Length: 386
Image (tube, rainbow, N blue to C red; front, side, top):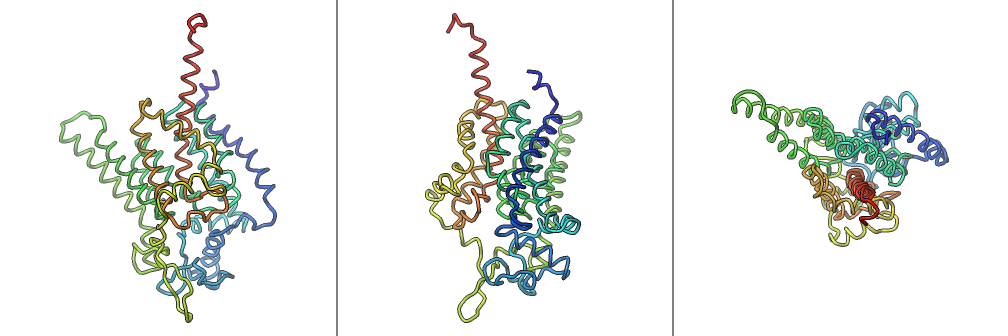
């Protein structure tokens, strides 16, 4: 097929054009009011922007209409501050300043488009462009990503950063990949174990690198330099996360989730640590995360059935070490949030598993690749031999 000879850039343009014609009518059909895309935590991300622009601080009591002790704020050094990471709000500042409230929706749409393009590029590392394209279109319109286009979602940004970091590492661009990986922890602290897995694999790739001209000592020194520089860049990318925590809570390792403020008896303020909310029995959590009607990932993302079938084909791939890496990342996030007591806190599907769903695309492509090989082989066998 001549379409397979199209360069990757051309396929990317086709995907962006497709997204334009899908997203535009979808968003118009959902726009009941100017702020109808704001749901759940989105109000508090916007409150951070208002506080920064109007007050020049991160004290949110005067920027929210709700009770400050409803579990959506944290108690900081100087008062009630954001519980949620502020990275999305900071990135949104120019969009909000230029376009007002619609600017937040515009940023979210751009994040979604970047995410879909990254899914395509990740799949292109393992499969031909046509298979990667088919999978990408399925994930753009047959998963929760379409629903979350009309939103203002930190989970989308978090997935973009982690996916970008993984893609760059798999391309051997370790320095560039370390930056979004570090920022992904700023976006979502539960990304830390996923980032750790990717960085360990990056170290493996660096040590396994092909020998260059020169002595063994020079070769080893070169590898050590790359590994150390990657680690240093990653640590530097953690500075915004650590500095924000220090500014708000007096420690670089304390976050708002560890100091969530709720109302107690006799007007007392109680502090809740989110780490105490991972108590759900594992088997029950796995079942609900998979099959719950409103929030289970299979009823709301049926394309995952193909991904599960594609996992069975990993051993036949020449890139099976990279695919096993992605499978490990998927399983780590899935099992982590299967234990989470509030796993269901999404208006549709399970936003906590966005990375799991995005990364699963490579296994859906694996299944399509298997079908392609199977039917190509059958078509090549003469009829009289069947």
